[in-house]
Length: 601
Image (cartoon, rainbow, N blue to C red; front, side, top):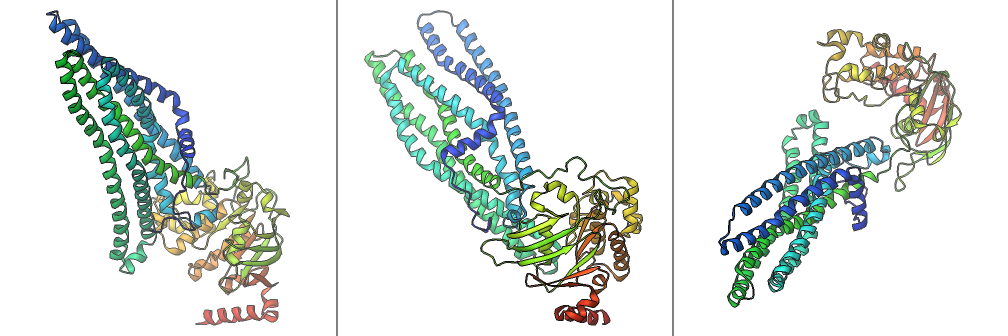
């Protein structure tokens, strides 16, 4: 089971103090409602404690040939009142528990969507999803019910023990002796419950990870005839979750049934010793009956205490996994555009306020992790705006990484990355990204409607701006053919669109934002010749007003660039025009010749 990579697949061992602090953080906003639920539960418990005393009075009254009507009515009233109060308290606690889960999910989702990209790349998305869904569910009981059960169960236990002691200390000693003996054995299995639950939740996360992988490449799975193999992987993870779930259930069953065992053994011991004490005249029959009733009543608070401890063990495993996710490094500020930062420029594709942006790399070095080799070895270049600059070079030269550093998906290990002469680390992150339109290499399209995808980066775009960008990206014909036009669902990851259509949607989405800097990572790779020519014209037109950086492998795109940056092995070899580089740089000449040959076939 892979879990989470880079040595964080096992949740950190939290101390008891850290666990309680994390639990209290979830519990704190609802503490007043929980206190009210606990108070109602205590009232219900108090009515239960009064019943054995009423029963003792009833037996004494029978011995005196007195009327028992009043006592029966009192008993009936206590039962009805106690049931009603406990029902209201239970509803409040259940409702609060759902609120705790909602708040935990809301907080965790907001944090996970702000994770730094390296953190996401080191983790399994399916496992993170299971922490939002499965692990937060386990908070439901531990943050409300277990706390209340521990409090009310403990108080009810103490009150019952006191009343039993008042009635007969000898019988109380017998009862406590049995409970302590069996309770000690129960305490030994509690850590096993926590461990089994933790492993079960990890296996559930693995199921999500495997399914996310399979559905993310569903066509590849089918085309490769790998359904059975993928099913086997999922089943193995499910079997692992079942195995640990059964182990947890075994220990929990042992803990819960021990309560009944303790009471039954205590009952037999009390019945035997109590019968002897009645026969000797040490206590009355009514006292023995009341004591036995208290003994049976003791089942409830003891059960609550055992359940509270069990739920704590289960919840602590979930809290550890949630805490681990919360400790992943996030970007330092919320990705919410400041006022005006993400304003859509009418017409789309034009330069935003301030004109075209400039980009400068000053002796930039970078590696993804300390244990990995450097990707950039002192990269330096300058791109004034507007205009088009193409980045070319063999695979692994570090071209796409340039875009990741500009967007601050990654932080440069050394040197500086400047936009408009200002270090990107000094920009407000939302303002920086509002300046940039970015088209990824695989041009992702999200599930939803075509309109939702187009306005994803510009939610306030006008209809005129949308129509304009549809025409410029050659998507107007597609919209006319679709059954519901812009409201047509595009399917999971745009499965209902062709590769070229997805690329055009991604380009239109970037243009609609009205960026000052446009980053295109091989944005025309899946387009046919006709659409590629059309999109090249769109990009060339945008380059008159904004700065366009493009990673390109097609010579037809490169020759349109105002300047070309040739990269190799994480360094900039040369900068110039197509004609200059063909004449002066052997690597570029080789790349250009190869592409000439490829286009001639």
